[in-house]
Image (cartoon, rainbow, N blue to C red; front, side):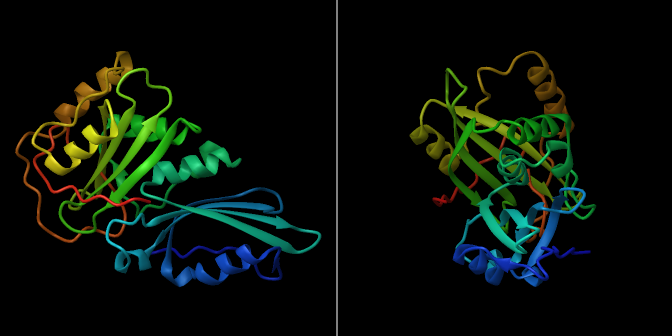
Length: 255
């Protein structure tokens, strides 16, 4: 069941033109609520992750998720809205956490949202979510049809080697789950070549050690090789990929 967001703006006036515009274009009827947190006790701040269903009909590959921060002046009865589009829930949550949302509050998502398929996915989601400004998103692409995947091309400011990182998500429609894998590249050209080619597995980051290596090994066993994928349109929510991704077309679009 699709949950529509409640922005809780009744009785409030926009504090600036951009907030008024945001209120007018973000119609709850076109949005699906994935996660939310309202600060107690009076809800002066709201943090939300929503999916814009109108983006399905927009420019191919554009990110469909929106991170929304609403700040209310309870005395003046005014509000401001700030928002940013993101390719994945984890990156949207990261943006909200950087703006003051408690991490443990925005990680709770609705039951209708696809769930992580394995431990490595959980670990990578948390790594992205709690990474602060570590990752600069260079580009992203979201596919609504086969292959049901989303990728984010990023620059990792903490990486001493292979600083260009691809976070690749792939949906499993039947299981209602998704997986995440991280690939590492020396430069952006090499990463884009891999996205277009897909003839080799996603290169493992050189800094995978200890717990990450253990999680990667367990995740590699999670899916048996040769598992068939039903050719259907992608579902409304979710995301994910296996460690050895077969050749696929890799369209790209700047954010």
